[in-house]
Length: 126
Image (cartoon, rainbow, N blue to C red; front, side, top):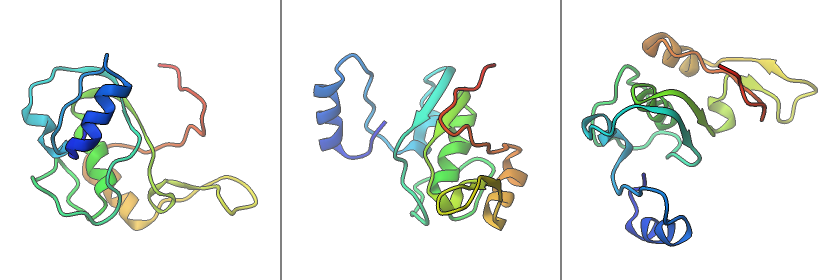
């Protein structure tokens, strides 16, 4: 899924076996695409991005959390790259890994019932 038509054209050339959809991620719930085992978001818009639709649950300003909330209604599990400030942990620039949620992360988890976790590159087994 991509909103930029040029990126979709490139994607279709690079990965022609994939199904490419040119649309905003907030349009996904109304597209009747079915249920997925896993969703991967490698580069959603980050930060305070203008929304084109009302996202499910979370109504805060971080668009990466809107992406996670939308995907939670379409896939059993998801893998997301989020900015360091939005992650529920601190590792970069720290002496060691530690769990740390800021107020916006806590709000997202409270509003959606979704708990964010780090896997630090290790796949989780169901």
